[in-house]
Image (cartoon, rainbow, N blue to C red; front, side, top):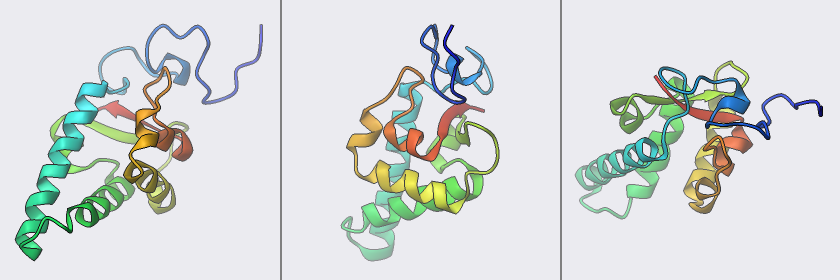
Length: 137
């Protein structure tokens, strides 16, 4: 039997997160893609409102969104949308996400394509690069 690399998904994983040692359901299980997308939409709409309120233009929405996602992920592991839907970002091997890994994750999220390329544990390239996973609270 081949030795498993820590954090690498198992070849015989039967549910998202099994290869990471996470439960199948309940708290700390991998968040569904539906929850993640809905959280993203909530965050985007909130940032549109903030940008329009601050600048009377939606041109700055992407900047407000980047700041919101970066700061809240770095400090709390969750954004407004994620919090409302009961999910958060955690480091696979424990410990805080911190400002560096939140920056890496946010920049890749803003590139749009990396989050769309997910593995069997529903981790997009932005999560794999930052060694994070989105779980239920």
